[in-house]
Amino acid sequence: MLIAFDLEGTLLDGELFPEMGRALNIEALREITLKGIRGELSFEESLFKRINIIKGVPIEDVKEICRKLSLNRGVKETIKELKDLGCIPTIITGGFDILAERVARELDIGIVYSNRFLLTNGRITSVKKPIVTPEMKAKYLIYLSKKFGFGLDRCIAVGDGANDIPMMKIAGLSIAFHAKDCVKAKAKIVVNDDLNGIIPHVKQFIERATQVNPLFR
Image (cartoon, rainbow, N blue to C red):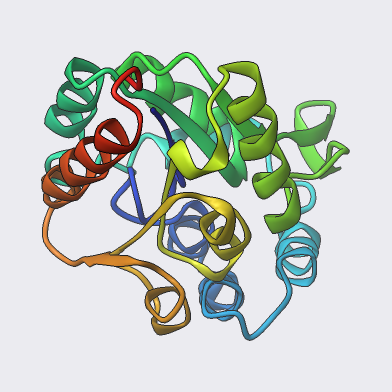
């Protein structure tokens, strides 16, 4: 069983760009981020609007801001229990590597797809291509399902924002976690408590899959 997590707002309590907005006193970073999460702006438009605002910011300042973002309640326990159930947890995010890779190390998650800042003399200039767009998130899930020999109907996607919808649409089980209304409307399951709340649904999903195919793990 493969389970793909979004990062910010899902595994992490908060979002990088709004946190940067607070640190740099730029309210527009928060406003643009929220519009993107709600689906009011396309992912690419939202991303590049924010990148244009933070051009020239030292990457070391961003790393310091990243340290202020902590894991959501129940995340460590949930990842451990998912592994005990035989699931393969992954991170597929439109967020950035300096945050995603830190979280992956904390949770011992070996598979991470994320965006990367382009730098000049240690300062942000743009985003490295290819960009992890909502459509790319779905493509990475398809790739991983083939790599590990799972059908997409044996994959789970967990997210909170509009950019998670494409991968949630193709997964066998989609879970909206502390999600925006546009995501809740598309998800099969909605969880509003801590992340441990997904465990009963994952167990039921595994049980149903095993009933269909007794050899399934």
